Image (cartoon, rainbow, N blue to C red; front, side, top):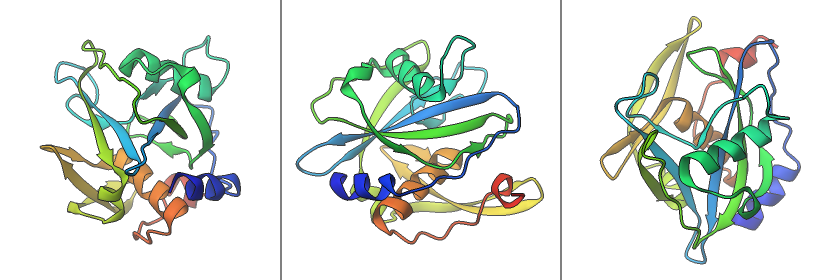
Length: 197
C-alpha cells in the first residue's frame, strides 16, 4: 500500500493557494506497518481557544522563522507528538485548503516506522490515535456532514474512531489521500477556494 501511495504522489500535481494570507501546514503521517499502515491523528485539548476537542493531524501555523511550510509541519509534529523529523520520509503533498479561520493549510504526506513512539504534548493534546488506513478505505463513515462555506454546500464524510469524530478539513484531506493514492472514489465536491481558479 505504501509503495502504491508513493508512486501516485510522485505524479500528482496538487492545487496550491497563495492569497497572501497566513499559512499553516500539517503532517499526514502513515506508519509503515507490515500489517497495514496506520494514520496518526491527534485530539486537541478541550481548554484550547481554537479547535478545542477536535481531531486533527499534527501541524499548525507557520512561524516567521520557518524557512518553508514543510519545516512548519515537521516542527509542529515534533512539538505535538515528539516525532523527530529524521524519522519522517516525506513522499509528497496534497492540495492546499482554506480553514474557517482563513489559514491556507498545506498537507504533507510522510511515512514513519511502525514502531515509532509518539508522546502527546499535554499542553496541546490529550490523545493520539493510530487509525488503520483500511478503516477509511472501507468508508466506514459515521455520517456525512453538510457544511456551508463561501456560499457553497459541501458534503464531507465524518468518521467515528474510539469515541472521537473525525470531520471537517481533517476528513477532507483524508478523502483526498484515499482518492489520489488508492482510487477510493469517495465523492467530494471541489472546494470553493479551488473553484475560483
